[in-house]
Image (cartoon, rainbow, N blue to C red):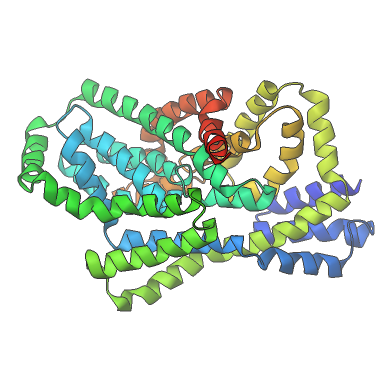
Length: 436
């Protein structure tokens, strides 16, 4: 009864548009006050403070701040020029360069909306000027921006690690091949679309000649520091030189040094507004993270986690079956719920049963994040749709229609990732083998 009450109160509050953090507290307090189960209010408060008082949690706001600084520093344009230099003359080459830019920028920002905003603000007008349909370009950016939460360092992977105790480094490695596969799937559709609908070859050639006139060495020099950022951040984690939190700190200082002193695209006076923007982005999530610990403790004391585990094990008898259901569930959930809260709340509840059915914890994390990242570009509440639509001056639903073929390509890649676990687990396993 207590377990049912926790979920019932929480879901009712969500349905009434109560903020997620407050809904979690209501769900936690209900069995304590009404049934005198799930601990006490004092324990609830202690668990809330312990949830906020965590060193690993600092990685989230720091990665957000690093991404904001990189966005203001014009890093996305330098990355795009580098990839366009190689791909621009081929059919669909420039849209593919946009997708590659999202892949690499995601390795800097760790955020889907940040990737969409930074790359889209530059690429949507650029593609439109070259004759590409503006709404189609916005749809491309909306879906490709979701790569920002899959390619490491990924904020959702950090949250999954905090919620479940799975190694952040393993999750980061696990996201590399899935992110590349999804990027390739998006590129395939982009090339097919451009081949079918045609491109303004004259305008593209003119722009590529202009880019080529600058010379490869100059382009490489301009983009070198942007390309080096993920190498420094991820290299520090995988070599054991830094923890994920320390690597996030390094990313902030690296972004500052590159933007202020190397590219000189930012001034000291602009730092305070960036700090404010980062705090606004992280503020709501911070409350969810703090209350998640208390919510999880109440779930444990009311045996809600055990109830969910019993249900899953009683109705599903293989990893294939449970993953199939979870893919559909999280795909739909991503349409109405933000990635971070969904992972924090549900991952620790689902993981024990999935492990017993033979699902690798890293693989589960990758699948869940991939499912939820699609939700960033799906109506009615896909955040990337609103960001891309605002950039293009189009309604989110108009962008969603053009984004649909890209979403289908994403889903095809997702099913391959789901049913071929080695795509997610190969690199983490390889690193563990090498460490031995």
